[in-house]
Picture (tube, rainbow, N blue to C red):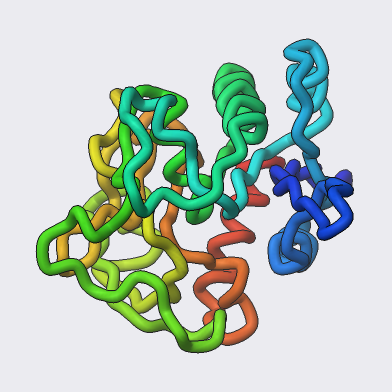
Length: 235
């Protein structure tokens, strides 16, 4: 049986000598492979026809983590605590996720990916979580696979039906979804009210999570099952 091909969006890394590299964490690659998919890297490109061709090559799309997102994309000026941005990557991924959505393929946004997904379809994000009153710690110091805070799932949501009423997850972010894009609904949040997951309820698998499930597949079997569910949707 042919295994589904899963495109994973790449970061643009600039080395000390100025050379640029397209790169992704091997955690994404490992999660997709072990779940039964064929992972391929989708580097940042600017030609729209090439982006459409990238989509034609894949059966499912993962929007990976990475740098902050350009606030001009959602009508805001840069806040003081905004980190490094990559407008080229932002524009590439916005076109990519819209094209993938038009093809009705399964899409999973992880960390930055949930934020980018939300912005692409008309939502906004917090540029920094210090804007949230009584915010809990969302940038953990523990090892990457260690769960550090609780996430409450929305009853009868697609993700809620999969994960149950609550789970404990890892956390590596200082930005988060603020206003949810039209067509999406909140699927999970933390005790401080920060949105931890969104989903398109009309799709079989079109969701974003703020945590990093790919980092937890060896210690949390449910996170491995989550990737398997994504791969099944891509078949």
